[in-house]
Image (cartoon, rainbow, N blue to C red):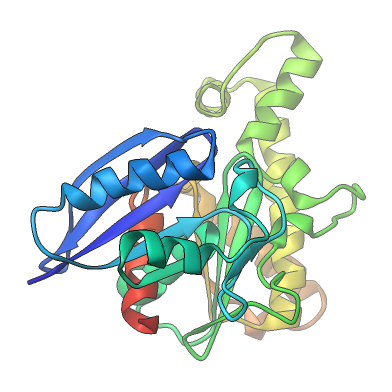
Length: 286
């Protein structure tokens, strides 16, 4: 069977792997090059090292990917990817078909195709990292909106008048903890402090859960998905779906609409989600 080469472009590294026999194999990475020309050279090196004949290239990328216009719009940590006919350039360089999709969308596509959302029709995917991203799926298909901003949940505002990306992640909680104590900590260390019954850490994490639940309420009453999938490193915490479900149910019941409560689950795929989603996007669209 032929191979699909998958790339996941990030600000500091480009992950890659080969999709062979319905599995991701031979995964590795290289440092994100400083120019588009250097990026193409590095990608060609990977493609030429494929253990089987390559049928196409599947890319997960930052930015607002406009597949119809065949460009990557918006801004990202890799600025040279944007606002030129990147599909045409890559297909000419590789002499292969190329598909590109936004990285958060790729992670959601992976979950819908093979993971936590495999049986869902209407679902949202929310990734909690340094900021907040996401994707919307209606009748099993990704919905990007009129301006490619569908699923940009990080821009939701809550009662603090701040956007969710500023209040809804454990990274921001760690930053807040450092502001208040002068002690530099990571997100994992915040949860360790919670386990040790540190009162400040407990209060800050509680505020994060409250802000996330408020945004989930707004998502639920506007999109009405049956399933909410939570991704990102924090999704490994078993209590996350429980805490969010408890808070969201209270908010919905408070408006007399508790019957529209969705199921909230952690994502199945972790670090491989973007690569797998890029491959699924290639298979669905090539």
